[in-house]
Length: 576
Image (cartoon, rainbow, N blue to C red; front, top):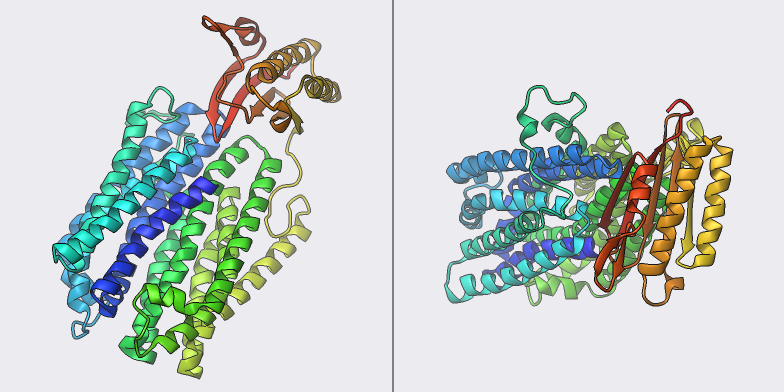
């Protein structure tokens, strides 16, 4: 999660850097111009979420089920859909830039021409931006969020340097900021492409051109399936752009062009929260999707608790900082010494109250989407932003000075309604948890536990497994095979996965039994090590590999998210 959050942070800082540099080197009109075209630019992440996030959720669930073919088909569809959509968007935006910008900003405005200049170049960034975000989603799902973190942080540093060079030294104006952003996203996209090309033998994803075959399985993912999965979050992003346009109009009518500058700075604060939500959301989709595919609801509960704890601590701290030192944030965007600095500081203090409730509602929205509550997710996506616009509009008519109170009022109202609805759903369906709606009862007979990497704990684990198999009335031969394979793998992990302090590391065991299939998933947090193989001074020799292969129906190994994962399937039927 930390790697994903830092990657999202760096990604957002790339955009925020543009705003900071532009506002200080060009002036307040510069950041207002960027704010004007923000609704247009939100089309880029909307497309990447629609296909990239939607695809990564489906791929993560497929990986959790150990369905590699389906994961590859999803990967291929997501890339192709992202590429075609972004090319079409580039052509439209580049050829019609003045006309499109005029829809969002009056031509008589003092920052209209700055907005046109910026958007004309930014139109060329659609392909690298959309493709970059889509590829990053799959790199994270491939179990390598650190690569995304390093890549995005590097591209952010590059963007900062290019902004200064293009604007301050080459005198390219606001267009220089747009060129810096394009180069930054091309760099990020290229690194992710290299990951899949250079590590194709180790990656979970490969291009699968069978997606074009008319006779492929009806259970395979389609472009429509990807869109349906990614729709709730993509519509949320698209509506955010629509809402920014609505807020621009409300603030412009109530407070004028100076008010637009204050709103632009407040929006940067909200976007700062969005960066945290982006990192947390990608973790929920990739890790949570795989856990759902594995039917590991205990792991999903742990993940969500960690997410809520992180977000609460981080945003409470951020809110306190803004409340105590609003000038520190305002000064970043050239607010010091301006005639509206007092208005800016007051607005920031009020606006910061929206941060935590807005974030908590967004996390619940992502979780509901992942769990398949698409209707609830879409309602929250639309309601969250529609109620926000309505409250701000109402408060602006009560009094222009009260306009900013509409933001926290809307968030508190919405989260209260959402929690109330989930509690009602829990009473109707007791098997799901209130608020999170995570199932608390396994659909199949299941055993889930963790032990330390010691031989005594492994003995205890094997006793747990024996007891569970007896309770499930598993055939003797299958029980013997499960015990044999589990014992072989667990002892190999204890002996070879960790060199020092084994008591600080853990093995997770997940066993599920249905009428026809028994699955065993064993994870450990030791060094990358395939427990099916044994290291020797002369290299690697197969240890019990033939024995295990002959005892189970299928056997796979993957190192993802700093964990070794071994997945086995057995027949649980007496007739097999």
